[in-house]
Amino acid sequence: FFSEAVNAMEPSPTAATIHLAQLEKNHAGARYQGEISISTGQREGKGTYYYTNPYFIYEGEWFNGKKHGQGRLSFGTDGFYEGSFAEGEISGKGRQELNGWSYEGEFLQGQRHGEGTLIRADGGSYSGGWAEGKYSGHGSLTLPSGETYVGGFQMHKFHGQGSQQNPKKAMSYEGEFRHGLRHGQGELKERDGA
Image 1 (cartoon, rainbow, N blue to C red):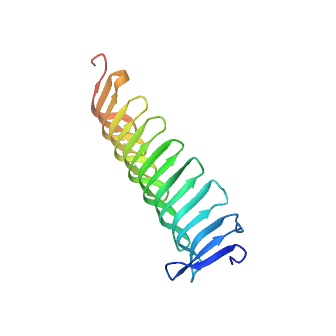
Image 2: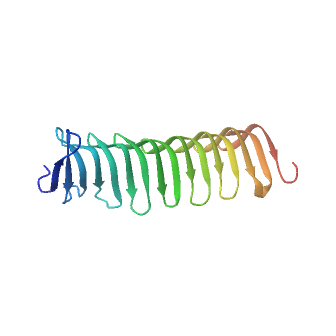
Image 3: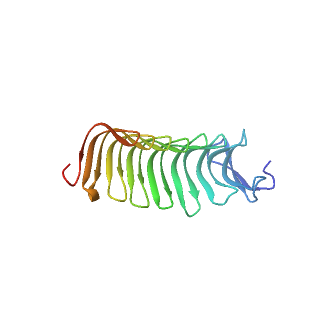
C-alpha cells in the first residue's frame, strides 16, 4: 500500500519494524518518514509526520499508528508542543509555546490539566492547578497591571479562600470568594484606610 511513495525500506534496530520514507504525499496529502510495524503496517517507533496542512509537523514516537511517547508537534513558526503523547493526544508532562506565551506542566487529552505554569506574552502569569484547560484548585495569578491573587480557583474564577492585592489602587482583600466575586468572610483594605 506504500508502493509508489516508498523511497527506502530498511530493517530498523528493532526486528518488528522497518524504516519507511515516503517521497510522495498520500491520498490525504500527508507524508510520513520513520518506522512502521512489519506485522500491522502501522506507524511504530520513531518517525516524522508531515500533515496535509504544512503548518503542522510531528516528530517523535509512535505506537499502533498513533502519536505515543515523547514527541514534538510544531505549529509553523508560531510555536510548538514538546513532551508526552498518549493514544494520539497530548497527555502527560510537556512544554507548549505559542504566539509569545509558554506553558510548562501537565496535560490531559490536549488540555492543561494538573499542575502547571503559564507565562503570557503581556507579562501576566499563572502557576497552580488546572482542570480541563481552566485555572482550578490552588494557584497564583499575576496580571500585567501588577494585581495579584493567591488562593482557590474554580473554572478560571477566584473561588474559596484567597488573597487579592492591587498595588496601583492600594487595595487588598483577604477572605472568601465565590464564582469570581468577594463573598462571605473577608477583610478589605483600601487606600483611604477603610
